[in-house]
Length: 552
Image (cartoon, rainbow, N blue to C red; front, side, top):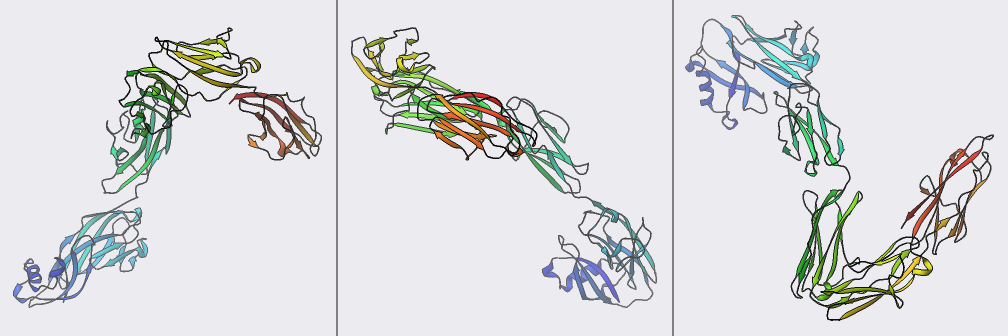
């Protein structure tokens, strides 16, 4: 007769007769000497176990029948929704028992092709002692009863099937922008309760309890007094007792912050020969860049000057100026400027190198009429007793608009085009009356000035309209441009280098918007703007004017 036995063995020994006999010895109902075991067919029950279900044909001498007994069963199974679940109920009896299954909540029996009258449908299949539920749903959950029957009696067992929905986790907001010193809060939203919530930052657990450094519930991460180290990716990881895990992530960015100098070099005085390193470091958001200058001009371009810059893991920028074999000509005021879109910060200190006075070449200076001009005399050598400025042969200052600072900076306020252009000479002298001279050419440029726009326009749809932009003063070369709502316009008639006309052949409502004329040269950029409103055929087109100036 046929019998079903669960064989737990290593697959490579599957056909060992010794293994078969050992299994037979476990069951006291049979005499080991009278049993012959022959494999009919096998199927693997669980992929993750070495458990093999085998149908065995047994031949033995025995009088009477034996009622079934349950040898092995799965007491409970936890399955995710849409996954398969298997319940095992293994019985032993003589003759071989037949199996029936029932979901107690529904009451109907489950047949080989599915549930008879129970409503589960063909997804539930009976494979003898094995009940398989395909694509499990929450409706499949409940207590199942397995009954093994033969002529001698029956035995039954109950087992529990739990079906849980897959975890879904979401963190809100997905992107959070916070200023340094502000507060931040992330919420972890979980599809079903009961899971263990853990927060991570850039893959590292967040310290300070379930709510993070700022406290709060497990699903809430609060950060107070946000610092630059707090920016990064935050993960909410949820683990349930069933063993499944889900996670979601969000990013914390810092809002724009002006640079702050964290380290700066000091003034040094030394003899020619050794090497010198000047260092500046700064933090900010976004990470700033650092530029260097010497007495207000770019650093010398030679092999003895080496500039290095790198960004740390925390987003700070560190910049060095390394000078090998310092000479007298390398002396002067060095300045580092850290800048990003939020602002700038700077530091300056002198590097004094003993030696005779020396003045580096001064590039051509462009000043804006009406503004303040500053020219620094790039003096090297140490010590320096006196620095003087002259225009032509006249020593400065010669009026109240001019002054010379102790560090050798010439300041001219309210620059005048006719009076302040020309050749300027700087002289540096030490106590031994040794001196050096250097001249610089100053060009004064007048910024452009626009004629105010005319009175409001009055026109109907379909009519023509024009706006004239005229530069009444300002040095050439001049650049004129028209914009509508901030975007350049191409269909513009340029009369000459001082005048430009915006012509609209046929007005429509699409011509509503802001029209701006921009005039610029090397000194400044100025604008005039009109807000144009076009009404229907019986309406009017009205323009309102505004002006602005931006220095270049």
